[in-house]
Image (cartoon, rainbow over all chains, first blue to last red; front, side):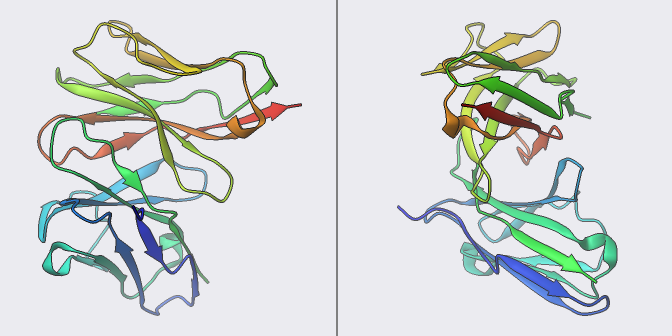
Length: 114
Length: 115
């Protein structure tokens, strides 16, 4: 069974540019999460999809971040325009419905904004 | 609000020895759960062990076990017979049942295993 995949693995962009990160969850997982780790700090929650609906987007930093999950399958996270403080590693995770279900993490996308 | 604190940025252990990683948390919820995740260098984060708060018995997975002290809000991870492959970043995380079930993470502890 394929795990959670993320693309690209690395992205280096200039301040003001746009970047789109993609996450493909494990097939059949209705829950999809985005997290971010800024260097030296905790991994922080960004948002949670249940199928195609946003269940919780309380962690999204501001309106420069837009997440979508088309058809309840893969998800994209767009940052527009990118700022220096957006640099970090963006993780995606997915899980099945149910109690205390393990979240399976992708390898992350390392974003560097210059 | 929920917080998770890992007070040990780095730890080291000799191969075959035992090491304990510390984690404390704070939550006002009653139905919650705790995880230890492991992230080896340049690899994906994987679940090591899970503990549901309502269970009194400490979780165990082979060489990995936890010491869950609910009253003290402590959730330490013990690794027995440490192996070179245990070298990784270890993250303690907590979630609340119901709602978004987002995880709250500690800053992580980097574990080095010396041969």
